[in-house]
Length: 426
Image: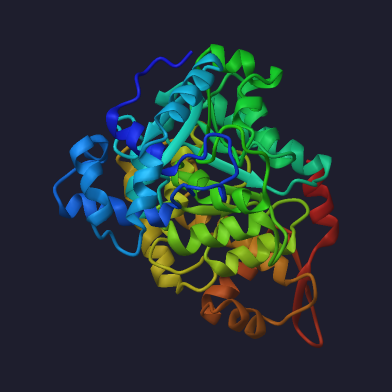
């Protein structure tokens, strides 16, 4: 049941922005987010809040008031939809839904901090509202994936559940749904940011028990009764990233699809949420290209006792570079030495390897991906924008480990396919 009372501010925002189950093109048309931001800016300048719009005296004055390019008569018509609001709230209450306006104290601070005016004016939800402020790991990926990819996803989220890391995803078929259900089945918590159909998903059997136990929250910036639209799915991606501390793209197509678009948007606009990609087993071209866009390599197993700390140290080691492959060795190594001092102080004792080993393990998958065809050390160093001396050190280490093979006449390097196959089996 709806356990919190709608604040006057939220009532006003709903009147302005909600469709109440109707077509959004029906008159009067609800405000878009951009239009509501115009109203919010005007209210701020006038030292008022949304609830002031419910004042009968102000409503009488609105038709003569200029608020950007908005039709003030349209605003008045929207504010007079009180009966529709009452019926909608009763319906939502009966289905256990709650509603948060951007002015509410319980509204997720991450959304406002990271997205600012792109944060949704209204957030509909069901389940434990407190989970929205706990951050976690966003896990996203394509809808159509193979069993190997799904197994990898389950392994990651089961680790998250064991280590108390919340999982945030989009609830769509494929990686998104597997990550949420996998975390819940392992006893963890999850937040699902849905592109539509919230009222239907709120009572779905796969989520019902977790909602009752307070381990799941489902949220949507769209009307709870609206169906699935591709545009809404694209639009909600940024909310998944904004609610998380870190993000993992398990699988992505290159240059198309919601996963690719959401990851690129996050890399460009939500830089406070580091984006990682899976570079393990079968590597999709989209994953490779996201590395070039600025994503980081997700740490490979084993994840020891704290995946979160491993993500933190990986993020710290490359924070001064645009990507893992275009930083100078001095930048990366100096960052690594800083984290090594933390290791000595006991903050990251779960990482047994030295910082330079971690840097090598982080860069190695990129080197191997470029050595599917033979290359000499100079060509490889140039393509990855790495100093030749550093590249030769890494190639020497990879040779000693049997990860690559060195040919003669000409001297080139290539992936040791036999070793790679054995690695997958192990």
